[in-house]
Length: 392
Image (tube, rainbow, N blue to C red):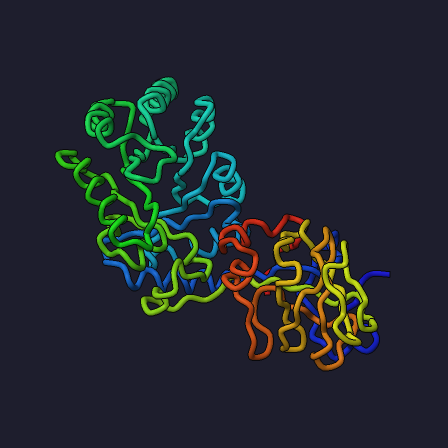
């Protein structure tokens, strides 16, 4: 029999969003495109009017669903000075094009093998040039196609992943500018420690020294991620590349004073089993938790295969009936157990909030990340594909 949120004693509960027909397990993530638009507008208001916004949609929009949020951003492009989108790979760019997103798309990762440049250019995706070798390959591909190729040049000022060293970049930029088959639309770097004013100042100084004498013409210069865009005004230049802030999360707490943001994602499930256990009863593999007294426990259909991390074993919290209920025992592949002894009577079908608000309480992704010993990015990106993304 299919799950019904309104059967029996749970009839008074509000029904969850409509699930896809193939997803009958009551665990889902709610995505609010209006909150994404709100955050985009809020960010645009604190930027200089000359500064555009490249919304970063890497990793399927940090696990939120890139296509829906790209469309939401495109709908407010004019008022938010949206330049376009940043993705990590050709595949991510192709997914947007397949969804009929026509905005500019910059591939932030290093394209290799170079054969992928052909596909990128065919679908109007802008590649990053991070070396002389990649510039030669792009120029060759553009010449074969009979049309100059747009690109953004990446300079490594301290992140240490991809990009040309400043000494190399000074000479290379002039060579790239003289190549008739390359159209340099942007030059950028990435902030490794935006929370550090000193480290950021050092990177920006090196970046600006590298660009001295470079004829910019219509070239966009950019460096700022969310932290830079909100907290390091010098880094804003012509474009900013916010990611985390657009999803409603502050890169560091002090930035709450700079702008008001709204969470875009909430993660919810429902109680599927309830039981009372005597004092001393063990829970889950290894019996790492034993009931300190007679307890009432609820089982939720979510586990580490869904992205609810094992580090939350005996550490996580879940909202049920507006109460913070502790996760007890080890997180397993498909299920967790929570202690609902202190909550009002809980029955099968009751909504449980893993991330988000219920009543006056809220569990933020920051709180979950701290409890799991990680960062919000990893929590978001770790919510697996078997958790349906739905829109309220």
